[in-house]
Amino acid sequence: MSINQRRPVPAGRLRKAPEGFVSGDLINDINKHGMDETRRGFLRKSFLAASAALAAGAAGRASAAPAAGAGAQAPAAGDPMILQPRPWSTMLGHPVAFHPYGVPSKYEANLQRRQSPGLTQTAQASVAFAPLQGFFGIITPNGLHFERHHQGWVDIDPDQHRFMINGMVKESKVYTMDDLMRMPSVSRIHFIECGANSGMEWGNAAVPTVQYTHGMLSCCEYTGVPLKVLLDDCGADLKNGKYILAEGNDGSSTTRTISMEAALDDAIVAWGMNGEMLRPENGYPLRLVVPGVQGVSWVKWLRRIEVGDQRWNAMNETSAYVDLMPDGMLRQYTSIQECKSVITSPSGGQVLMGKGYYNVSGLAWSGRGKIKQVDVSFDGGRNWKTARLETPVLDKCLTRFNIDWVWDGSPAILQSRATDSTGFVQPRYGQLHAVRGTRSTYHNNAIQSWQVADTGEVFNVHVE
Ligand code: MTE
Image (cartoon, rainbow, N blue to C red):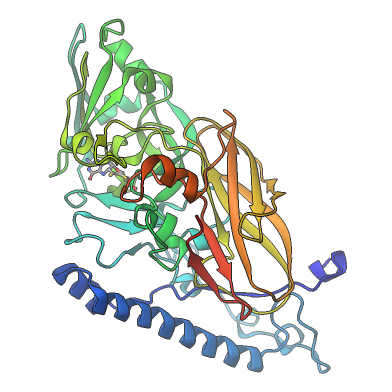
């Protein structure tokens, strides 16, 4: 049954955002010389030019094949795409194991993780954002998981990798990968969000698409040994040991203090990601998974955990991943990623191609538990309607929401507002600014606004 038979309102069509709108040369130039008004202007121009090119392409395709798309009227002569045999239905296809490791269709080549120009000086200490606008459901495909490295990624031979537990333990132990993978394991689905996600949006609307506003976010099924099992195995002093230090085996030796409470609750020393080994970019062969806690604590290429009774005051907890408060002081050791949500479709850079029905869809998550409710506003926060939550709705996991919307062609501002199982409601920017000021970078969980113009174009807009 087509959507038009079920609904009286014809379905609208959504044009994708231009994906790769920044040239490599411009990225290199910005990385080398930093961002200024001229380069920001070039960025804006690239985005608009790419949007225009996409529009021209879409118009061409529409005139060539008028019947494409839900809700379109069938041409009188019928659609040749369905009436005539297509070349691929009359030929021999490729053999099995043509790709021993499967790859996406060439028609999906545009959906990639992308580096944000100007954000960092080098590509080794940088971020590649996940293309949230192209995902369905809640699972992030392994090849599109966001990446955040402090000194580049490494591909470590698992036979040469060792993992040690020391500090306030009865017996310090060194494990091989083989030792670990023979222990009792668990598999759980959780989100990971970098504490710097949406960091550029604190003071204003900074970047055009959801990939760059919220793409330091991913969600996978992780497999490994519960950290508690390993701490017990070494006889950790759980009475006096209040913290653990996790340390990575890459050039940055990333270290981070984690509370014993989080370590014992649901942390996993993990090697699996969505049913296969971790990808090198995400910590192969071993990483720490600390559900609900900001990404920096999910130490990759994990080589050591130390049990202690005091925080270590490492670089990534004293000067980075800290909250700049309105009085100029830094608040340290914010760990939990608070309740947050974002509409991924329609979102910045996309275009509504006509009035009609749209399935508005997005993601919600909370580091404190499950998502209880997501409300969506189409008028900038004056009126709210409750969205449908797709199952499963899991602890410290992305939850997909959907809501019906009939666009009448007039300007609108779309927002989503999540509530978690503790009753915490995602704040407006005005509420967040009142307690945190406007100069912070980390832990921005404010409500995101997408403005739909009467032309159907969708823009990132700041609403207090
Ligand atoms: N662990 C090591 N050893 N080195 C790193 O650079 N980056 C951290 C964390 N763990 C990092 C690390 C940060 S800041 C984040 S947000 C997450 O890894 C990102 O994980 P991902 O690259 O798998 O998305």
